[in-house]
Length: 368
Image 1 (cartoon, rainbow, N blue to C red):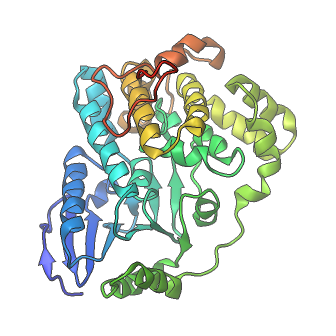
Image 2 (cartoon, rainbow, N blue to C red):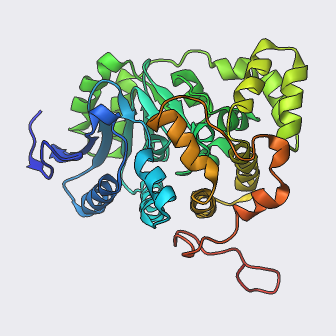
Image 3 (tube, one colour):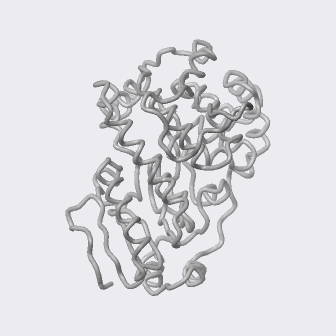
């Protein structure tokens, strides 16, 4: 493919170029499975703004360098350092990242995300809010935040709160990754294209001039999605995860009798109790919010609160720094996390709202 206007360098963390009518952004940190840092978020947001105004650009495409995946999430080593140091770097990163997520969701031109390979956390944020989301047989999509003492963000609680039944609650609390079929079933993806056909799809998109052209091109290479495993498990998932509290959810999972339910209970039991309880509250609240921007505002409050938890630094230490996979959560049990502990996570952020949505009005007409 010929690059008509190359706006990125080969050694840049985001490669930006225009090929025909297609503007293409490639996340380019393959050794880190293209994990997002602050500079990448800013570069991509600026490129989207420029391409929106470029009359020669009809379609935007996002993919990832290397063979391992689109994006493994945010740079959690940097987030841990910010939590330990008590500085603003993580909060500033999230503020810009959430603006990028909202920008993608409202993008006026067709936005195609190739969700091939690993697509976790922040990778979901830059892909699953797009208009055309393509998964492959290699896709591994998930929001694993409870594993590191954190809560799904980047609009993850918006997406998961709107998945069929209680499937989103199951995925959020366990942090379990899903394949292509479940990604389509839960509403995080739209089309299944075998990975070997992606180069041909990209070539076709370089000549697309309209949204109809994009639809035709994707339809040419897409195949039927296999049956979704989550759909067949809806019986125990909906019955167990509809409980009001995390403790009752775990109890129902253990008592249900399905081996998969018992396995889910064990998985949740290994996660940060504070993160599990706060995630459940965040999902339930997200269901009542009007749209993505309101949910992102809520997520920012929770994310900045998480910087003060001992579990965030400890979870990243156990999973990424020391890799002993033996986090020492505090509190160590669900019962040890009070309702007041959870409620504090939803208090206004110290630096105010992100600026994505107006605060809801109170009964007397004022803002909350």
